Amino acid sequence: MKLNIKSGDLVEVISGKEKGKRGKVTRAFPKENRVLVQGVNIITRATRPTQKDTQGGLKKYEAPILANKVMVVCPKCDKPTRIGHKVLDDGTKVRVCARCGEVLD
Ligand SMILES: [Zn+2]
Image (cartoon, rainbow, N blue to C red; front, side, top):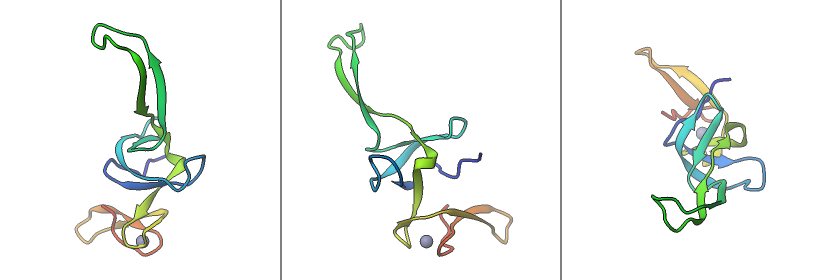
C-alpha cells in the first residue's frame, strides 16, 4: 500500500478514540504505514533515570498512528478527503482532493 500522506500535511483522525482531532504530520513512515501527527496519539511512558536524563519519570510523547486512521484535510473543503492523483501539463504528479479537485501538493 502506498502512503498518500506526507510530512507537513494537515490530517484529521477518522477512527478510534481521538476521532475528529486534527494535527500536522511531522513525520511519515511509509514502510510501517504510519504517520506522526502533532498532538495526536500522545502516550505516557515511565522511564528510568539514565546518564543523559538523570530524573527519569513519566515522559509524554507522540507515537506514530496508523495511516488508515487519518485522512488529509483539504484546505478548500475544510474536510477530511480521499486523495486523488493528477498529472500536470509539465508531467508532475500531484495529489488532489477527490472531492473538489484542489491540488494538495
Ligand atoms: Zn477539497
